[in-house]
Length: 630
Image 1: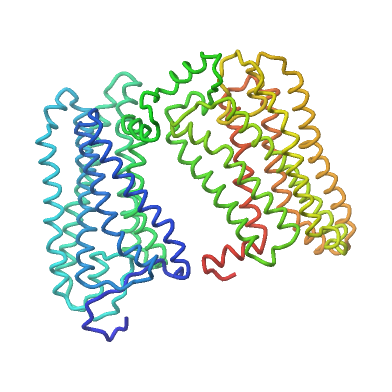
Image 2 (image 1 turned 60 degrees about the horizontal axis):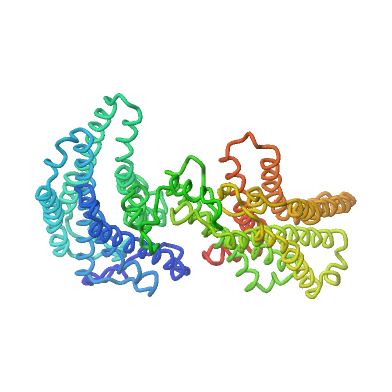
């Protein structure tokens, strides 16, 4: 890699600068992105090929886009994975030139396909009566051939010209794959012709395509605004949403990368590499997601892959009505976001991300506590139980919440519903007990520090944990009585998961025992725990205020911040949900659903963040994984 190696015919690729120590870990999300890209685009091709209703011009263009994305992923995959998984960075000149040819060719193809899709939308909206006569199958094939010939023809000269250049500078490339400007910079001969030709190709393809796409949407807007009916205008524009998203996914990272290369010499090498990853990895991963979410035929066909009976897939409202009217069945219908059924695929994206963060965050906390000897202390054992409880809360609701948003199923059997009630309420009771035990830990550490180790021994902490779990497991058992009730009202629950009070309202049997027991249980667990936590902090404050030094007072209170945040994160949603259920009958069902989701998801999401931010050992361990200095 020295500058004196003038005759070498190989280059060295770059990963993420400064993060070489964690390249193996970074290979996991990169592999996941490549798997998602290859699987998603292959599924799009399979669905379009096997679904007769999709044999239309728009979906033929979508197939071209999927093929292009597959080609782009396959072009960058070999060098990316060899760097991150195997640590091999050297690439021969011929291999490098072949890679840059395919990367740039498929990039131009994608731009061209997006332009033809814009043309498809112009014809469909501006001239719908002639759509089938303008976009015939032979014409679509001709457009596909023209795109391929233009992309390949324009890029053949680039590697040939680069092959003839001598390379006498440091042969270290600035990306994880070969790009024309990157290789050209390492030549020690006159590269004006190469530079001019590269600029010509970019302007005549990406530049022209972008301008024509913008003009297409100007025509579309002109046509749409002339439509009298607002509903028809929205319907017409809605057919363009997927294409607009794909255009933004392709051009936004590319413009950002160009700006950084031209004017961002101050930017870190890491930011350039990350932007290039966004440019080449984001469109192939997200294009299938965008078109699956927005295209009903593709979405339904995808769902059939996960269901044995394709006829079982109905529109949400019809399905809800038919199931709800069958009051003698033991099947209940869960509710997503009332009135927003058409947006469920979009809602599934943030909800999937939240669940991923819940699982990842709490697993990381458990891993750090297990592997860090300095954290084998009572406070962190209780934190581990809190993380385990949050993890289980996520697991107990993920299948129903995402099942609704992904359109898989809104039905749940009575037995499954009672099981979910048992785990949801039992784990909530467990979390309340853990927070009380953590308050006792803080009380002992501040009010009686000299006896802390003798009071909170390992065996005593284990006894606390076993008691907390047993209290929750035993006290929730009477929910089994729900199994023997007769449900004569419409079987539509008001949340995306089963709750005791929700199911109880649908029963037409005598429910007084369950109602009184539930109230007593709330008072004896959640309310009693909250009162004891409050009393603990009264004693803590009394002790802290008796300390003479202000610095010591602040230091003592600082150790309680994480626990106080966790208590507020847990109890505030519970109080809010209770108030909404008791006094918010005039509120829309959407408010009830939102409060239910906050109650279930907010504590498991926030607790790992709170303890990672406020606990030095966890923070230090996290930073070690990313090779950062404290």
